Image 1 (cartoon, rainbow, N blue to C red):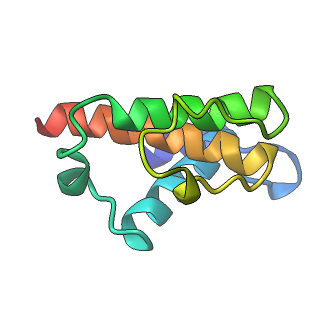
Image 2 (cartoon, one colour):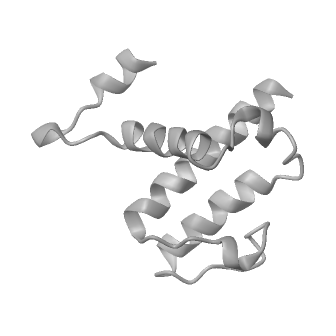
Image 3 (spheres, rainbow, N blue to C red):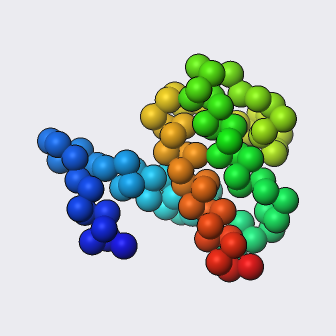
Length: 102
């Protein structure tokens, strides 16, 4: 996986989108404790709905379709366009991991 990620390096030693999503996923695991084993409990599409909420915040300039967000609305952390894209990507990866573990 790291070899694939390194192929996508962008200009000026900036991290590629894939690297940024991987970093966000690691943050979800290490900072928030949302490992694959934690995520197994989210078996009603919560992770993909959360990704949808972050993408909707990107598309609609911070407006979140509340019906997308699967948890308490206060737990939604809008941190701007780029951060929301990273979160959405990491949540999609989390859903794929959850499916692999289930």
